[in-house]
Length: 533
Image 1 (cartoon, rainbow, N blue to C red):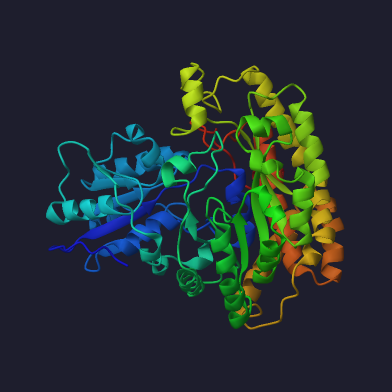
Image 2: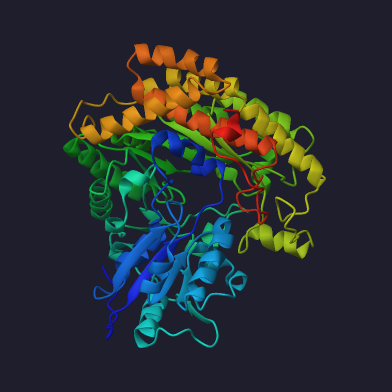
């Protein structure tokens, strides 16, 4: 539902979503091959756009697609911004441009909610989730849209229940510009992993939307263009197992009624492998990817970071269980733990090879505000503020040794032969375990065909002809083409291209070792040129 705040004046609100700092997880090097410009529509700011009073006019610009223009700032009475820590510099730049045009600028989202002190340049700070603070901000802007003499903060005390959330403002986006869609079913996570800020920001008791809301959001997304996959951005899809089990039959029925127009992906703790009934439901709903924060194969380290739930099943067995249900596993890996030794990089590389996980986000540990890790390291005097470093932690090993371990793991994981070997394993042992989809108009239609042809043309040109690993590509592509495995071929080629290109940039020092680092990466060339084309 929209805000119930009574307003007297019409306002024009420009919602601007800041550019992401490039990372493994945003797949930026695949965009040109796909003919898209951004990763996912941003849930948070689109939710705010839909919540604002009906008589207010709202426009949305995703700066991952294009920069906001001066005339758009001039049109607005106020500018709304939201983002994560990794987008901090981009958020500050939006505030600077808004103020240059004489406009109020308000900031919300997870970064400012965790660290409001980092954003002194914004006029209004919205701290916490949608709720009474949002209504107070609306009331303030209804009364006056001139810049206040000093920064004002609005902090949520009473959150809007998730069942009352409106459908995010998907009418403001072009779905065809995004690599995949996104949807939120729950918020919060019951676990207390030392490095994670989710419990502090969103609570340990998961809050939930109703299944009918999720289905309505999926319909709204489909209406905005060809989005082939949708990512459940929940912090942990099985945070409330009962609720997940209740949602899945609705997703299965929705897929059947609409001809399976989408693939689903989600994040979940690895102990999902102990829930075969839920995995079978996910398979029927056509979940094809699960991100699991495995973090490290060194089991003692999992206890230290309070991630004991990863020990519920042996790590390799857990991965294999998901593969048997047709789900490709994506994993997070962390270097720089206090338990790391000179042998840790070798242990991680052995795990990568044994698990056959194609995509691993390999990061240096970063201490985030409002986490137990931050509190512990701050008390020990082990936090640093150094823009030349890729982490804010004083590691127990030397910084240079940790960086070299990171480079060694990235080099090992994303050498072209290694990436394609792991994908080949999944093509033979994971993909065949998925349900056989019917041929339907929802899947076989001109927009989807045109999108596939665009992908194939670009893949054959830039990877199959121009790349220096083209022989490796064709060893995978030829059998896939003979067997009619076009979707699988496109998926493998797109993801591999991004990973190989990104890893080479890491090797040259052009990317950061942590997704949360404050350091600004050096300028890069174009995506294709940077990978030796």
